Image (cartoon, rainbow, N blue to C red):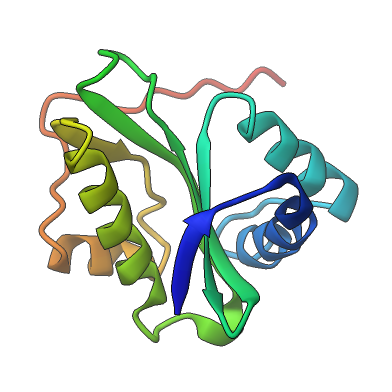
Length: 144
C-alpha cells in the first residue's frame, strides 16, 4: 500500500472511483463520467489530492482544502472515496491517518469535513474520535 500526491494522469481513475462512491442510493446523486472528471479537475485548483494505491492501482483518493477558513490552522476534506471493492478493509482509515499526520507536520490544528449521516462511514468517523461540531449547523434551502 502506498499513498502519494495525485498527478493529472491520476484524475481519470479518481473520477471513476468518485462516480462509484457517490452514485450510491444513500447519496441520491447522479454523476456521469464527464461530470466527475470535471469535478476532479475543479478540486485540483484549490485542493491537495492524494491517492492510495495497491500494487500501482489507485483504489481511493482524498481531496484536502488547506485554505478553508483560517489559513494555516484548518484543513477541510472536500471529498474522500475508496473503491467499493476495497471498502470496509481499513483503507479509508489509513488515508485519513495519512492526512492527519501530513498536515500535523505542517502545523495545522484542525481537520474538518461534512459527512452524510446515512453513510456507512459516519459511525467509523466516530470510532476514530472525530466529533460532531456542537456549534455549527449546515443550513440548506431548495432553490427549485
